[in-house]
Length: 239
Image (cartoon, rainbow, N blue to C red; front, side):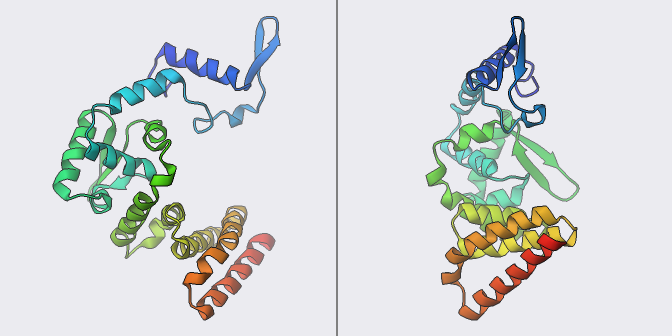
């Protein structure tokens, strides 16, 4: 109900989608039951009801190409974005970015979250992310690259704060050396906090990425990093 902003139509469409997908089935003459554990029914896994998709698309339809481009950058980020990062990542000048942000805020599509020293932005509704980037996965690589590079520049003195986001953005951009490096750095941060399973998942992912990153690295550097990766995997496996 929270996703549909209290709309009964949203709830009906959501239940219909769950039934169509086999997640809710009849349990008896007058009852229904879930076919999966209740904990699995999360916002990220639920199908988007047609009524919600139609509503979100109708709110996006009047926007200018600049506003859609800015909204798409916000959709690609897994965290709130600093306005300065958004300005750096956008493919046009600051004046156009600010005009686009104003239009998005006025339309209720983007929410501003000012802090003491910066202005943060995020999509006002998580489901906007799906409709903004659907059917465009192959054309977003350069957007991921711009976003990753903007985060890298903006946080160059404290990369640890965004290292997991950098790994994600550069992986989506298919910039394998950077994705590989930041993925290992993220895993090492998990190891420092004794989060061994989380670290192992990332390290094994980095191991699978290593052959794609290796051609872009100096041989000695590639061998040293691979040895460090195996040591980290051993530590994650054995605590």
